[in-house]
Image (cartoon, rainbow, N blue to C red; front, side, top):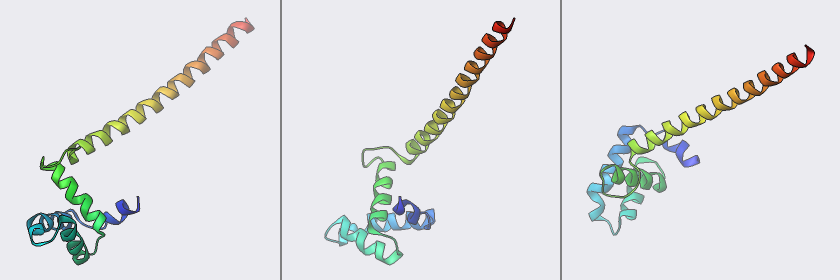
Length: 110
């Protein structure tokens, strides 16, 4: 959670540039992680944040398996919609029970 919060302080442009730097210059380092460590230090983010950005860019480009940014956005929207529908359903269930009790109460008084 903290890494998500700290990554929000970087603009999409900075993230894209950092990812591009890793992908373009990783051959000059012993490993991709070494490239990420060096570049993360230069832009002031954690290596883990930069690793996440790179992995997501790789998924978006089809170079790595997993949900793309577009997939993740759609999943999040569907989860939000599902949550709202569950809440609406719960309200309707309670309202239905209330009306049934009111009807039974009305019938017992007559």
